[in-house]
Image (tube, rainbow, N blue to C red):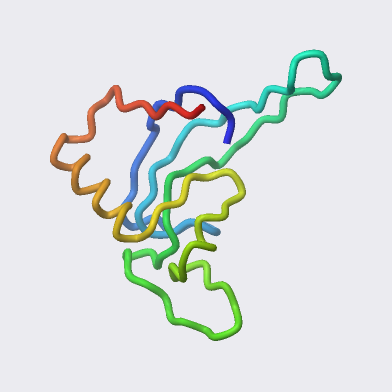
Length: 113
């Protein structure tokens, strides 16, 4: 995930996406900047979220032995991501509870270093 400030764009408790379901916070697209002095070009990262691994309704999917289930949190290996921030189901639900209590401030910003 590129360093910088991310203003929260949207939040969902019943998201039904291609890879991200249930509780999710959508962040804006951002470019990864190359190291100074290199000839690399910035790469735009899209579809950035804070999310977990769960069903659309926030429950856990069935455990299918021998495979990593994208709708079921199975342990520390599930923190791996293609650029998103992933939390355990309990942690993202707790985050939503706290932000619900704060009425989701309109200036809510995440800072990544």
